[in-house]
Image (tube, rainbow, N blue to C red; front, side):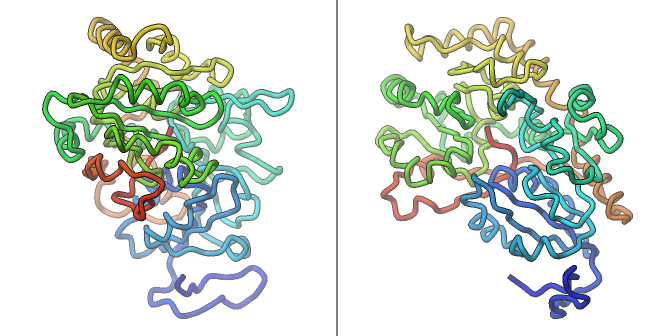
Length: 424
């Protein structure tokens, strides 16, 4: 790590005075997990080219913190140890999760780390919507954030029920992943070529969130069907797992469990890679109740739901509507025939229903970058740079074959493209 002229609250003197550019506004990115970093990258990238701002990173302890240090290193980030960051003062902090935020001295902007607020969590006798509850917004009784970012104006109703005191600091900003995918739709053929998908070849994306009720939670039943029915010259399969699956079980173990995939040409996309271009290139999606499946409604690919546990889905969310709309995987029929049924239903009438579901992801389509930059600079007390905050198309992905790795490969952890966004 470099040296920082940042005030330590336990000392009247700066920690070090070796910086070349001094007197910058200091922004702290709180990087709990790989998922959170990738989401926040869409935010702190809006500060690019502004010489008035210095961005620093810190990684508080988290059960799913595996891979954070490596990802921050690959980004070339200036990383502060958590204990040191907790003794400093900053002009702005950005976070996509609540842990430890009471220890940070800075005006805080909190964001959701996935699409909308899809999941319910049960803690003891209480069930709440993840991300909108008081425990998420004001954990440990700390002060309200400077701003609570919401993707859709409908989320204000949930916030009013679960944490009404946060309404005055709420800001409907939009959804960055939605905007990047939509901006990239015209380049779908280019992404497919980059992935190595041939003409008339189908790409099937198998998507999973984390937890026992996810698609991966049923992988023992699903994987033999993928290998037995969907591999061949005219199809490619890519598996997209939530980073918490990799962190919880360990990357080696996940690759070991899926080791036979390489033999059949199935790509296992690593957690640090950009899954959005793979989703965008897919012809069919097999998913669950996670964010990535919901983002799939933007891609015009038919969706087949492997699982959709009602107990874990926020009934007011678009994920609940998708669970009632998309066909559900059946053990009694071939996977191929069910995917074709889903495609036929989509062509006939479900494309309209999917479009309505996708419209509920954000009420500020195409405006996340503009709105988020405006919010950050307002909190920083700075005028915005004199250029638009554009939404850029996604970068080209590496070939799928570069991700068809096994646990024994010496380069199994190599990164061939760091991406951003929420995962599953």
